[in-house]
Structures are given as structure tokens and as C-alpha cells.
Length: 506
Ligand SMILES: *Cc1c(COP(=O)(O)O)cnc(C)c1O
Image 1 (cartoon, protein in one colour):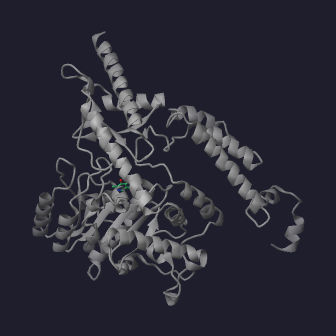
Image 2 (cartoon, rainbow, N blue to C red):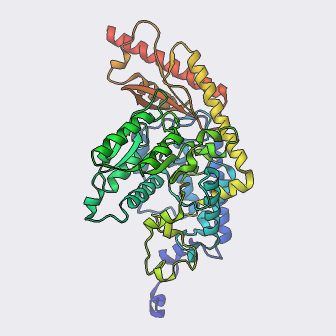
């Protein structure tokens, strides 16, 4: 800024006022106070929540939001936070609540929340050493630790990502580039005929990745599952052989360690062997099941993961971390170079290796220091405590399954494997016509629960039939809470069936 322009500015213009709101050595103490008051607002809302939701409808919240005039600022953080309390906190969906049992969201560990204060205020960016310094080493240590838990060996490496979707995309990119490395011809020619094998129950991000990578969604071969929703290995072998005979090439085989609906773990050892036999990249999507890595009791369920070329882990699912906290791990560090790009302004090739630059391994450039949350959690609580929390949600799910099993009007869809329980309400009496109604019974029950605010459950479709699903990731949820949720499911189920029967008779 030239001196003339400085002089031309009136004193305490809106810009000057705003500049006083930026973090400086002078405003640092004020920052801490404002942070603390925001934390207090959050604490009050968390403590006051009588259910996981107030059951708001989009129309109701939209009306309140539409009344906000974005051209008229409120003038202070306090006022804006107070407004945000009304617009957001009051009707937020609370994952800490013991009767939140819908999606793969966990209550977060206190040390991780405290660490957020450091991550956000220092605002480190993980791309290069000269923007991150020690943060890069902390992230690296955690990658080594996680790869160690998975048993990926001395050459392992990896990088934090925003979530399992991003980790899976990067894994598929590495698999694709490794499959076409050294091949000749145009890119479409090199990509033609590449196939990815994943179970019919695998996460949709594998298909999305195939599309983004120019393979087309049809490049993903869905392998059928057994009755526990685990990949059928003989079906995989058959598909691999048939495709090989047709001149197609196995680019990757994806095993899911903890499917989103059933928590099923594909037979990792057998799939790894087939991948080796067919020269395919072996990826394990452990976005959900990674919590087993920390569990002394259940670690054996992931035997075979150590042969993976890459592994997706979501710390924001089963390590009780705030969103986002995920990583892709690879067995061979050299593989990560398949995505390296050297930009003159950032990490010039001529200076490669002088300092550790995480951007060399990442699909992101500017990137949050999310690793610190996990680091502080581990240093405060230790790996074992995380594993035990995951063990306890598995025990809770087993108890929930017994309750479902014991109830004459509830029907379990499959045996529990990790911490999800898929089931449905089946009214007593002759074969009910309820599911032929315009809205499946499971959806109607789920909506009734949401509207009441008493509990939140998810829904999914199994063989064309809509089911309810409990996803349990809260070690503080008790069997009594589960009994309460199931009671509510049954009473809403009965009421809805009665109403429908009455309407049909009228
Ligand atoms: C949740 C999940 C993902 C996606 O992870 P995000 O963190 O939501 O992006 C991928 N795979 C599986 C098996 C999952 O459960």
C-alpha cells in the first residue's frame, strides 16, 4: 500500500474495523476468549440436548435462514455466535446423544476437540515443510503408526485425507497409474479393458472413483456376497478368470473391511492371494473397520490386511475423531510418487528431497493439520483406550441383535459383525400388506422417530426390502438406550400399521 492511499482512507473505515478482527499478536487474547465463549455455547447446547434431534423440517429452518440479511452485519463475534446458536446449534443433529444410531458418526474425543483450537488458530497448511514445519513430522509419525498397526512393513507410507471417499479415490488412482505404467498408446487405449473388482456391498466411492479416473463406472465388477454380505471368493475367482480370458485386465481388487451397512469383512487373505496371482493392486477399504486395528481383542478379524497395496482408514469413524480425519496408507512408499507433481512455486523438482513436503504425496494442496487431533488423542488416551471403546460398541451391537432377535415383531436381516444392526419391524398376524403401501414401513417408522426427536436410526434396502439400521459408535450408549430405541420402533410400527389398516378399511 502506498502512503498516499493510506492517508486517503478515513479513520475507522469498515475495513479498519474488520482488520481489528483478524488474528494478530494484539488480538490473540481476545481470540482465546471468543474461542472459549464459542466452546461454552456448544457445551450448553450439547448438555441441553434431550434427544439427537429436534426433528426440524427444511422448510422451517429455511424460513429462519431466509430472514437473515447478509448485507447487514451484526458487528461482533458475540452477536453472530448468538444468531448461529438459533440458526444452527438449537436444531443440530447431535452425534454424542446415546439415542443417535443412524449413520457412521461417532462422539468425538475431548483431546481431539481441544486440539482443534490449535489446528484452526495456527492454521498450518500441510503442503510443504515451509508452511508446516513440525506438523509434517507429526503427521508422518502417525502414518507410520497406523501403517504399523496394519502391518504394512518397513516401506509403508501414506498421507492424511479429508475422508474415506478421498482415500479410496487416491488408492484407485495409484492402482490405475501403476497398471498403465510403461504401457504405450493413447491414454484411452491404455485404460480400455481395465477392471476393478469389489463386492456388491462395497462403498459407492469405488464406482465414483472409476468414473473420475476415466475408466467408466462399468469398469467396476460387482462380486456377489455370501449370506453375511462378505465377498464370495469363488465368485471373484470366476470373474477374474472369465475376464482374463476375454482380454480384460484386473487393475485392482477392493476388499471392504467393514461394509457400511453390515460391517462385513471380506476374506482378506484369500482376496490378497487372488490379487497377487492376477497382478492386481490389492486395496482394503477399512474406512469403518479400521477401529479393529486398535483392538487387542478383535485385531485378528483384519488378518490379511498386511498384504494390501493400499488401505483406507477413517479416523473420524472408529477412532472418535472430529471430521475430517482419514488417511490412505500404502505398502510401498514409491507408489505415492505416482501422484507427485512438482510446481516451481511450491515444491520444485530441483529441490526435491531437501525437505519433506507432504504435497508430494497428496491430491490436496492447501490442507488442514487434522493429524494433530489424533496425535493429541493418542498422547492423552493411548491406542488401547480407543480399541476398547470400539470393542464396547461391538458388544453393544451384539446385545442389540439379541434384543431384536428376542422380539416377536422385529426381524434381524443378518448376524451382527461390527457395530451395525440391520432389521425390520414386522407386524403380527397374517402376511401384512404394509410394505406395498406407497411409503415402505421402515421409512415411515424412521420418519416418525425423527419427528419425535427421541431417536435417530438409518434405513437401507436389502434384496428390495426396506430395513432399519442401527449404527452404533457411541461407547456411552447403554443396552437400556437400545431397548428404548427398539420400543419406540415397535410402537411407531404398530401405530402406523393400525392407521394404514384403518385407511384401507375406510
Ligand atoms: C464411510 C465409508 C466410506 C466413505 O468415507 P467418507 O469418510 O464418508 O468419505 C468409504 N468406504 C466405507 C466402507 C465407508 O463406510
